Length: 89
Image (cartoon, rainbow, N blue to C red):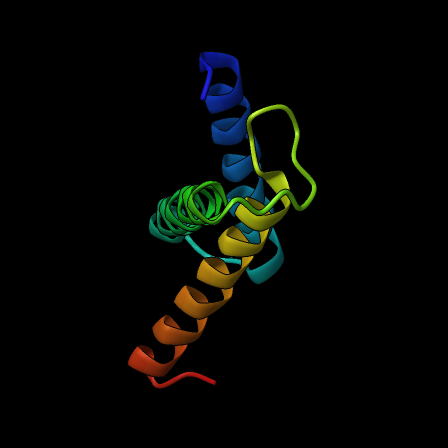
């Protein structure tokens, strides 16, 4: 993985977390929470795709398709868990 690919992935995953925060609404803590979830899911998706040799929607050395899927899965799962924990549905 090259430095430009890493920075692009960091930018894209941060954008995913920020857009999710705007869509689901929340305070400053939730913004950081969603960005962190997006980063974790994005890089887990990327590294899983790299280990398994999947080439779904790659952008250079960045496995963008599976990384995005991982980010979205983590964002929705994290949002659902916080709703269950707070008793709001």
